[in-house]
Length: 331
Image (cartoon, rainbow, N blue to C red; front, side, top):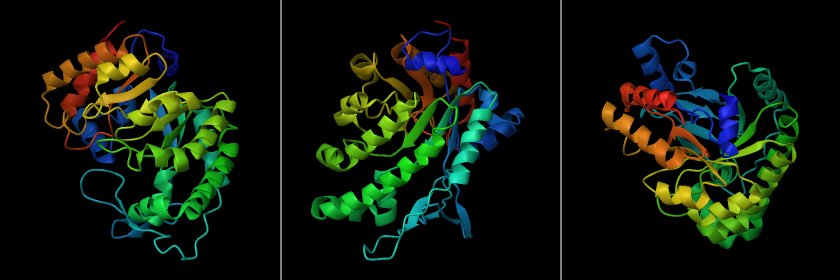
């Protein structure tokens, strides 16, 4: 499994296109009930293994506090993330110090990845990475206004976050695994949330340093960003990006995307969880998987996957049908 993913990143056509079905806990429970399987990821033959630097403290009432002191309210929509309800720096004068890197936790993740014997492609995950971490502390509206009116303060906040993550990487990259997975949503349905100029001014320099440190240790860089990031995709390639997740067909012309970037970038995603999978039939799901392999899987450079973690409004049969097509397809 690991070698198929590596071949895909190197744009080699292996025997099968690698696949990954990320699942919410609710969907995984549905799958286990439907199939009597014990381990949903193993049952589906997932090729990737992601362990995140994430450990939330339960507060009661569906609320949790993350490592950075941000409060989240879990929702009943079948997802696992929730919404931010407590911003430590909503008042910019509030006393707040970024937490120390939890070195023991970093080493626990690194050792677990290093010791894994499943044969999957192993990723150390840092989510709510940079822009998202800044808005989770400050509030998204406040941060966007700060980018326009408070340049010095915005650079200072992002610099503190960057220093934290660079220190964390110094420890994480001591261990044997294949890739760092960075999660930081920059896009919306049309274009970048902050626009390309603000992205280049505030976000790009720090992300470039993170990529550079990872690449210096011979590991791959996987970047997750929801939304439309076409305006900066070439720059991400120049910075060393290997794998881009997630590829939303509501946003991108997949044939054009593959033609323009497919020789250099590996795409991870492609099957819509937003508009297709919840309402599709089993046969339509099969046809979509075949089409996706034909369009995106040719000549490698593709990890077949839904565009986001599968939620419980998606029929289990649709997911099983897609996996059956990909697993039995031969190049």
